[in-house]
Image 1 (tube, one colour):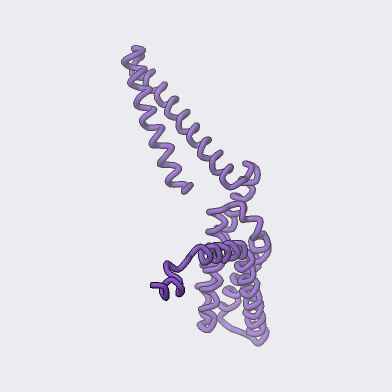
Image 2 (cartoon, helix red, strand yellow; image 1 turned 90 degrees about the vertical axis):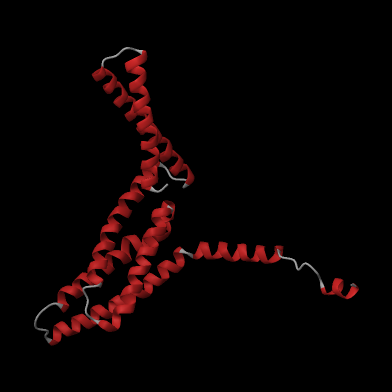
Length: 214
């Protein structure tokens, strides 16, 4: 569930519960205002945590994950989010115009893999090569390129280093495309299967033979 919607659900249960417990404590059990407030806050907190626990269990069950697996995946996704932010900043600090389209594609692919994984966390295992290798290399190389290209005087060696870095980024962009294709391979197979089923289920309302009989 979307984190904001999950928060709304929890608060929509906790607030009425807090108010109800306060009214019962104050009027039905003749508690003082302060005591009723403390009891109602406790009741609201318990209901908030109970709903949170239920939604978390439902989420884990839906995605067939254990709590330990989800914690591990979430930690890696949080780290990947920070890396992608650094990559975004570095990519658009580069002033090399011919590579603009490539840089936009790199960012588009990284965000696509990240967003799909965030929505379906179990798919993290399908993209481990991206998260543990290619993303790190992209961030490191891009930041290195920005640092080198911002040097006021560019020697022959520096120009050669920039050229080699661009070539390596080209290679990484190619591997990134493969990461995305492998990541979405099952989706494409499922889509093709559904298309085939849909085609077989579609029958023309009248055959040529029935038209001739008429």
